[in-house]
Image (cartoon, rainbow, N blue to C red; front, top):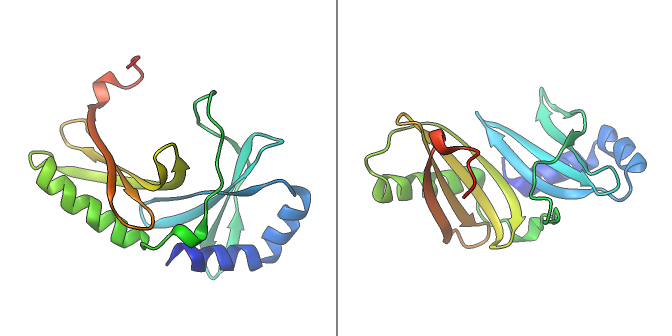
Amino acid sequence: MRIPELVELVEGADVFKVWKGQHAQAFLAHAFSMGGMLQLGYYDPEAEKATSFFWENESVVCSEAMEVLKDPASHVQPLRVELVMLTPQDAMDHALQFQKKEYAGEVVFKSFFVLQTLDVGQVFNITFVTHSMKTINIKLSSDTGEIVQHHIDSLMNFGEAQ
């Protein structure tokens, strides 16, 4: 499903309208997918929490609000749906092609993405986890598909100061 289509489904649903009535300051902040389930995250700056909505069994489902993982010095930015020209599948395919060329020795066994606005712009922030216990991170522009950043890290170094 395309992101704009999911936004339209979610924001047209009664469960969203009721929630939005209680969270007037909230805005669309991200889309997330792992294992094929596409979710939209709406950030409430007053509560500093995000609530996810997803399409399941022909209806919109709302999750509980959760703390947002972010750098304390940064601010959560709104997602601009009009800048999403790629489908999630197109973005993943493009990133996988790049991974096979740039990081050819790595075998991917898990992947996920967050569509979000960062300092580098609005991107599909795609992470591949490899059998060699590394993560490959590729950031693709949501409107052009251009790769704006990429790097590989060992999971063994996860959490260390960089």
